[in-house]
Image (cartoon, rainbow, N blue to C red):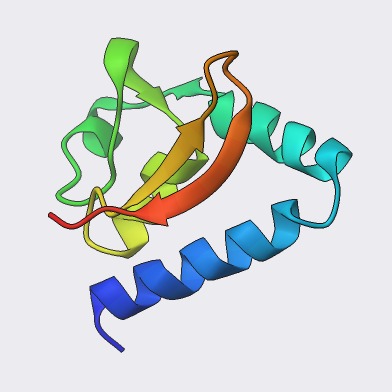
Length: 89
């Protein structure tokens, strides 16, 4: 399985989790939005994606597993999680 196939699998699994109920979708959205301050070694990692202010979140870690930057969360205009996608890089 290559990185794109793994990213597709993770996106499908994540979307399967959140389609079951709005409460689950909202909770997963909160988890996806959470960040910890990453160490310099994590910031310099070749595939883990670290965001603004050195914030590391779940998607940054998952993107590290698939080679960086493929998995993204899609939000509505109010900032609520809608679903996940695999971006083509």
